[in-house]
Amino acid sequence: MKVEQIYTGCLAEAAYYIESEGEAVIIDPLRETKPYLEKLEQEGAKLKYIFESHFHADFVSGHLDLAAKTGATIVYGPTAKTEFSKHEAKDGEVIRVGKISFVVLHTPGHTPESTTYLLRDENGKDYAIFTGDTLFIGDVGRPDLAQKSGEVTKEDLAGWLFDSLRNKIMPLADDVLVYPAHGAGSACGKNMSSDTWDTLGHQKETNYALRADMTREEFIQEVTAGLLPPPQYFAKNAMLNKKGYSSIDKVLSQGSKALSPAAFEMLVENEGALILDTRAEADFKAGFIPNSIFIGIDGSFAPWVGALIVDLQQPIVLITPEGREEEVVTRLARVGYDNTLGYLNGGIEAWKAAGKEVDTIDSVTADEFAKRQQQGLVTNVLDVRKPTEYLSQHLIGAENVPLDYINTNMQRLDRENTYYLHCLGGYRSLIMASILRSRGFQNLVDIEGGWRTLEESAAPKSDYVCPSTISQDVIDEAIEAVV
Image (cartoon, rainbow, N blue to C red; front, side, top):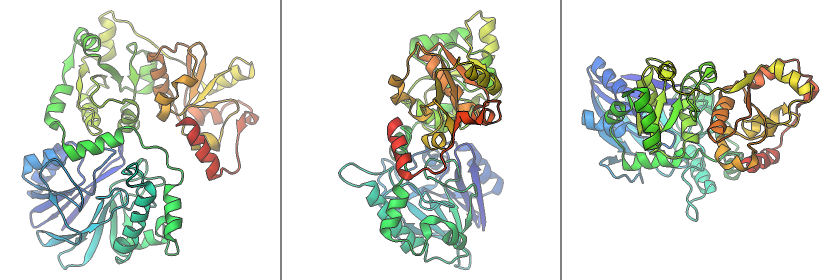
């Protein structure tokens, strides 16, 4: 028996490859099929099943393309209704693969169809559970993604999750391994560990949601408190996973076309294509095509694309680091953005050589910002971090306008003002600055290195606000103010 976790850090997502006697299962695959096909060829194995733990919301799964290329059967748990052929497993059903078996455990709560797969080894011993978003390391899946107005509430789902954990998972032996679908950084939970697997016994000792003395009411209150609204693309990705999507091969072929500056510009003008610049922060600041949106490939790229580009069918043309064009197209497709039309061949240098216009964004060091602040030259500071980050410590007078909710907070900003922007490290504030510049804001100054460098600057610490305690009510009010 072979069990391999395939972890993708930029999405904090874990897929799994399990094999016995030349037969394989892949659990929760990402959109691209090539890595899995190469793995199967390398191992000389035949893919028998593709197990899906639920309808994923934070990424588009690769189940359809993978099934088409291998002949494998797609398996979902009870109540999962799709518009494509699949096996809807029953609660308690046993599925055999080589000399091992999987027991289907219906564990609703994160979503109604959420399912945990219990792996039993060659001797019939419980070996591991693949929990999807039902149980994370240190946390559980948020119960608000599948709520339906007037039908199922997040409190209903939280109650189902409590029952699933107590009745299906916690009775298992302590030495059973826990393999979740996500780790720290995913928006599918609130407080996940950076560890990507653990024993169930250790989780019973350390995971707040598995406390033996916790009542159902206490559980519901804890898992529903302080939830930020899910990113706008979550529901759209879940629908793609239910209904189907374009072949990844077609998406990669279209998106990886090399475009001349003239062809690039024509797509922007005639097709309404959005210019997405995925280079490093310093490169973008040094010069970019007017109206470009910066979302660097080396940051939390796909989640920010999903949070900020509202239309999944938005035509997109790319500026990428050299040699990473296909990677960018792939990572866009993982979250459902399939309408990439190509990339600028030769990058920004080719654009300049063609005599095209280039824009820049001003930036200052933290020390220079502190100097200007002390001289009374700074009147408007935008802190683009999340409300919880802002509440923990922020500059006096800074306005919290989280990047996540820029599309609903534009009315709070005045194009005539000069805004100094910062986040924690500089990535989010530059995204915000690029969006504001594309919408007509000319007087923008990015603070290099964000809050980390502000803390180290010459600014007197009396300029900071440091609450000693933050109640849940205060957090909830802050979230309500910006959402």
